[in-house]
Length: 326
Image (cartoon, rainbow, N blue to C red; front, top):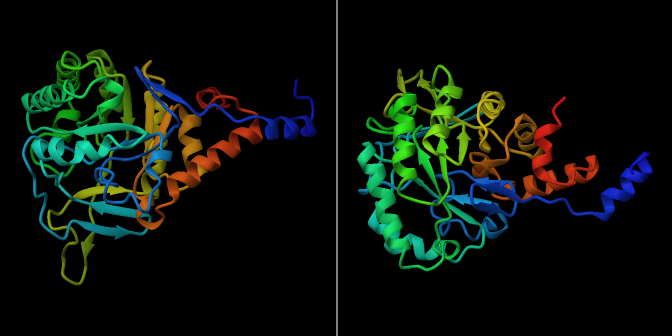
């Protein structure tokens, strides 16, 4: 029993916290992942980021057909973040299966494939085709795909994305359709650009989602006052970075109280204290995104910081942090 500061210090020095996180049938070694779109499919930044030390790598979005994305300029810096309008640029499903999936299989961390479609049928076709390919790869743990993140929240495409994620009926139906197609965990990535995010989260849970990622980017705009034109070619984009962290923490808090499945906190995490805010708000895990543009070591630093915080406060298991908010 810990009765004094000395006891706590002795205890902290003598144990290593349990950082593992369970999402459906998937167990991640720790709660820190890199958000979709930041590290591509893992190969592009392997010299900068120690991918195998992550709890999870969320891949760049995969769509059925190749997408060039939106016209440039499609990224602009803001005082506390970035606005992007990439438009889900990617090489398409068949290229992913042929060229990217073999590389993903070499990593030890959980690989979570982010998928997006323009129609409900496209989402179904994506999962069907990936599952077909994976049946040739042996046990699920060795296939290079440990779970799916369903992107129903991208604000930068005309069809699909956020248009699905604002309607709870569609969210439940889409999630249910994918649930029937795979035994792998399904993570619904939600938009903050809705009236009630808890309604959407409950719909995803009803459809069979194993977890909720919240939040995706917040719709934003920057205007070039010299040119008197939007700084982003498409006008509007998705705001990420520290500016949206309070929105993400609040959404995580609300959603974690509305559903019984795990919540993964996303948005504006640049240091361990930010991640711990999400964990205290109810998240089981977190994703790091924009921070990597300025600090490729952010995931490792954040993981180390969480570990030290747990030791300092005598927390044995990372999921125990959820119950510590006073």
